[in-house]
Image (cartoon, rainbow, N blue to C red; front, side, top):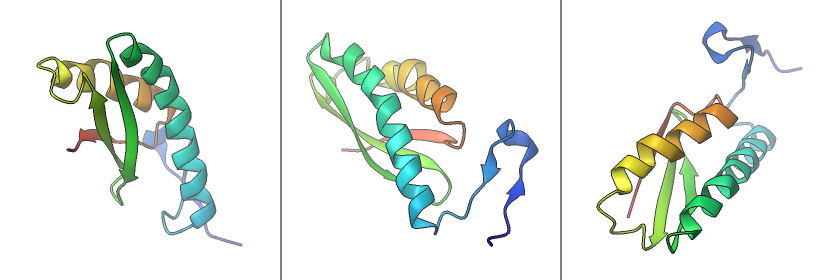
Length: 100
């Protein structure tokens, strides 16, 4: 059995091995479900968002699409909506970064 230790700063969440394929698949699925809520918000303005990858340091790299891709308010959207919702729904995610 894998040695899994609890981390205090994750609110009771378990520190998993990021090389564990099943854990990473589950993590990506949870992030994608959280992004569904965000997609509904962005779709109202003709935009969208996709998960590109989750890095070893638990940064979710996302791609803004549609009207959001070049929007002047994209930075506010990333910090005010995307990062907030993702970190609430998936506490393992430490940061969110938009890539082109």
